[in-house]
Image (cartoon, helix red, strand yellow):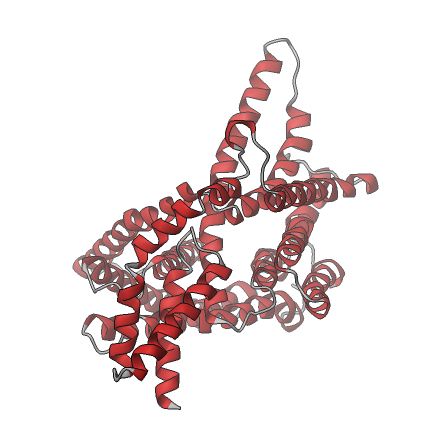
Amino acid sequence: MDSKRTLDERIGEWRSYLRRRQALRDVDVEELEDHLRTQVETLGEAGLDEDEAFLVAVKRMGDLDSLSREFALEYSERLWKQLVVSPEGGESSPVAANEAVVAVGLAVAAAIAIKMPELFGVHFRLDSTPDSQEDILFYVKNFSLFVLPFLAAYFGWKRGLERIHWAWQALPFLAGAVVINALPFEPEGYTQMLAAIHLPIALWLAAGFAYTGGRWRSHEHRMNCVRFTGEWFIYYSLLALGGGVFMGFTLFIFDAIGLNPGAFVEGWILPCGMVGAVLIGAWLVEAKQSVIENMAPVLTLVFTPLFTALLLVFVATMAWTGNPVKVQREVLIGFDLLLVVVLGLLLYTISARDPNSPRGFFDVLQFLLVACALLVDVLALWAIAARITEFGFSPNRTAALGLNLVLLVNLSWSAVLYGRFLVKQLPFAPLERWQTAYAPVYLVWVWVVVVVFPMVFGFQ
């Protein structure tokens, strides 16, 4: 039994690495795994032990990078059609075409949904007049509810979600809609704003359930969801930049003929584009546009050293000058945002790294980044504790305290695992699994802020 489990673990790591290759679909990986197991079994019957049989079988199957390239050549037409672009006017794949139609249809549905409140006199506008404050607040609270259910529906359709899973999928969206709109929040209260900030995170994680096809307990599917989130963020950022240019030229060309399209741009193009781009970005990621798949690891290679240097200089400067962190709300919010960015870099770097690659200088940088972030988190906790001691508990201070404690646990154990990996006491896989195993903690925390905080603090 122990031998069987060891072989399964080895093949699991091999399969996880192979699935990162763009040219290979799940069915291809399964076929290759069957071939690998047959090879291992044959070699075992010839007298090789398990380790020798596995290594020889993998070697016989060829280098994984070369294998991936061979599949890319063999299935080049299929890969080309995955981009939903037909060479020389040919017809695109029916599956790819259907996915495009569904994605665009759901994007249009999200755009219609965000305009529906106008039928009841609630208008999407950016001005800060007293009459618009209530409308702005409504959209701030409900924006994620206008788009993320459609994103979850897209994933559910694409993954063939079972009927019982559809019911579970709808539950967090219904709960979020009730909580954010039905609870008796005080006007402009802190708990209302905290709920509005944390609800999109909770619903994004809920959409992740559909992305995994209901297999949220699977380590591999959770890590794939992390990779999707990073790639989707890049796509959405690019779409947002393009949308900004488009709106700028819209204003420019109509202004040139004496017309002011500002109201149309603000009331239609901006809100519809914001929600529609969420679906289109998700579809583009699913279509496997390789330029973004190559860009994402490059961005981590660029920004990880930059943020590591920033935190090292900050810690060294604070130690040299003896200046403590200012105990102010804006400063603490800034530090929390910094820690979230660092955590995002950590997650995406881990998701993009080959677990079987040897240790290198970039791993040392990553460890330093985690260590510095951990120190900054401790300093932020000290500052938050000082504010609570002086002024007592409030919704904002309690939320900041809870978030930093959640981050503290994640960063602490990540630093331990990374350190043990660097000194060759552990492989890389436990560090990767820790990130996915800890994900439910964030899910629980954001729902606590959305649902429990308003009741604990009297909806203030």
